[in-house]
Length: 109
Image (cartoon, rainbow, N blue to C red; front, side):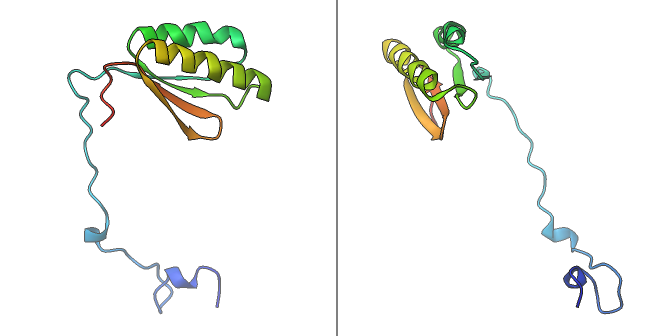
């Protein structure tokens, strides 16, 4: 029995999936009042100002801190959490070193 024998019929031809098993592609429509989401990869503490400016513009920002050392990543998280608090928004950790910042007025549904 070979590695790919489960994907073949008894006569050696490839198994065919029925068309009904393939899900239909769903179309995406952007809400009329939706704002774009920004993704940022700060490389130093100096990049925080630009992220805060985007938050002040009312944009949701996803921040990847995996390119920073542990000390700088903690400083960036602290200043951004203070900024989002001052703007009346919220933040959440998506994964280790990945955070999402939602300014006030962004629907979190």
